[in-house]
Image (cartoon, rainbow, N blue to C red; front, side):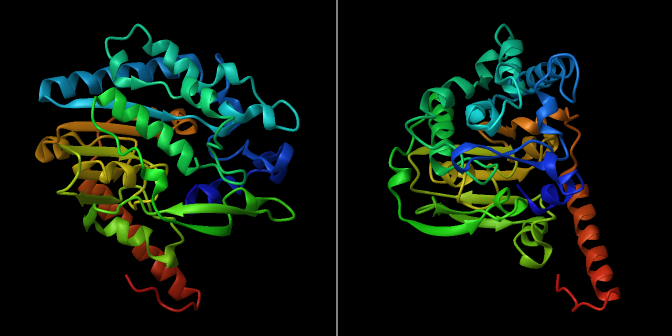
Length: 333
């Protein structure tokens, strides 16, 4: 979870923010998307009517990709509550009403069914043999990410790098996004990978530089963009990925796995697609990844990335002014 997500959820009543489950498991139950309200067919923030809109969005995207001669795939990252809800201290939701499960039902008879990857059955099958999410964080672990990566490669009929989890990694004890929201704070030992052994990040935009500047605390992230090249990759395709913090502009999550797998990969942090940009880039494959809780907002796919970059830069400039006005040291851009 990014700093901006954490700032928005901090406005919620503390007891509804994080649920303390059994055996050290923590769950996001509140937040800007009111997570537990998403498991409701008729009410809450994500009823079936809104998921029907997502089916239409996926169908429009798939149809446009076919027109452009581009392969595509849509990937929804299940909420930790959907996969490990039985670790809660008391029932919070009916996991069978998960938005990801209900969207899979909508997609079952869709003409775009082949472009939608349902991760819930896979994660449910693997959840005992591997820990797919960190205990004290909303994000998936490297094992969870790898399960999704393998499913994606299988659907695209491309070669996967089977030994990514055998790569060197660092073991750290960190305060994760949920662990820092409970009393007492809960630290967790994690494994941190850089999956790009052969891929190189060749270019980033200004928003990515703002994202990676510690001063901004990851608050400015939507619209970040990064391009990776890997001449020695086992697959020759050029890939364009729209995603969120489960992918990222760095190489420690899904973006890194894909950058190591394809000769060219471009990532944009957005739930909306900039179609003129896609057409100019002319990828072989268009991928879309989104966290289950972010399905609460249906995108209109009218993204103008250049305009978004300008607005995010202006936001950073205003923050510098506010910080300077408050007497803090000036922030360099």
